[in-house]
Image (tube, rainbow, N blue to C red; front, top):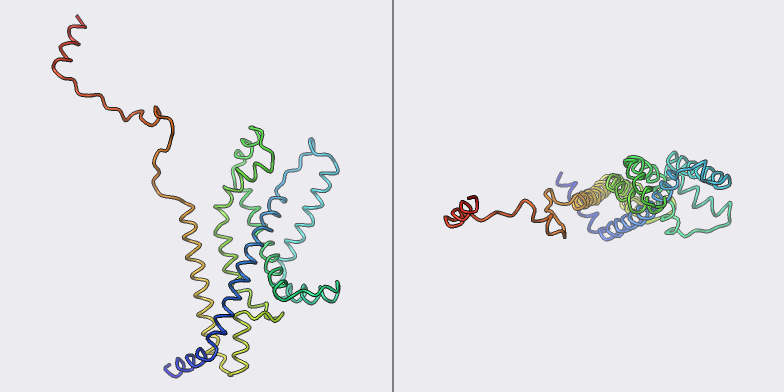
Length: 271
């Protein structure tokens, strides 16, 4: 055991900064990809749940909505049904071969993680919107809100709380899944691991170091996300907050105790 730890120490002494730079690259891609993936997911989820009214909407509008839903559904199924490593190869090399479009490695990495995350988030957002009580939408429409206003001010704020755990889950998954981007030469943490193994031939030691770094990042992300959820839940006990003085003081006023003189006056008035 001591020999193994000493060997790990030698690897860290030589390539410790490389591991840290690789971890930073992994976190950056995961953060950017999750952020833009959430934006894509919210857009697709809202469009998928947009109601189609046969009486109010004209035929061209209904046709466009059905066509858009079909395209978005294909997007979600394709990117949820194929591995990210295949998507990375297809997009990075396929864009160059089929479209003569040469993407930079960083641009390709951000794009691949974003659209992959967006496909999963689209279904999460759709489920969150559906889970909101339909009476909320009906109440918003009854006071004159448009569909967009209803989504922005009524439905999405309620749906957001229920889908926050899935946002965190996707972020943690992206931290691990960025390792597949080494196929397009992204120097993330796993790419550094392969480079160290090729230089020192110490596969197990390097793998243990990388595993500890990945576990540290995912546990820290989980802790921060739980703190965020707790903050959104608010305190367990709430105080009454109102600007109506009568409403605030109702039930809190105590009548002063009657003195002997006041009791005598009451008796005289009764006579």
